[in-house]
Image 1 (cartoon, rainbow, N blue to C red):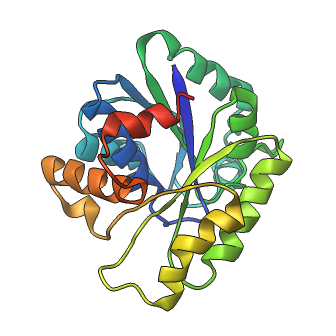
Image 2 (image 1 turned 45 degrees about the horizontal axis):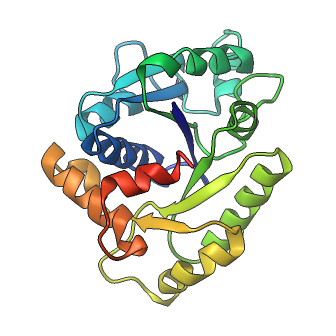
Length: 238
């Protein structure tokens, strides 16, 4: 089983669409995929969340949610305000490991930015990734401020012993400005990780076939040449 944790430089940067894009590519390569969202916030029990969006876009993948809280806050704060216990890191790690036998790729999508806390002990996605030895894919926005937030996220991962395997720009416009274009060359320098791709805006509105094509184009373009989905997935097995 290969593991890949998906984090962001903040909230609303495109983590779920990126997770769905990777899942779609892995499925195209014939891999059995599971997606874990340790905690979803801002949702009641009868609402669809990020995992439902992944399935809608990527197709049938196994999904696992371990906690849900009604207020749109960091999981630890949302749990405390709901009068519920936080989510222990050991329980999440155990649940991820239990998926080993039946899946080729397990994606773990964080909540908000990298250092959002999941319980009052203060563990974050970076700590979980370090414990599981799961490489981390960072999703960033494009434009001014991107380099600073991406560099800080990379440093936080390194301090916790987690490996940053690549960066994705979560929404890349058709006509990028100068700052955005500079991100293409500067992000790898600032994070010491390759730029895996840049996804166009509006992907969530596409149907499944169009989404898969856009995901392949967006994640494959920076790798150049004769790109295949299997090549990208293989990066996270090495």
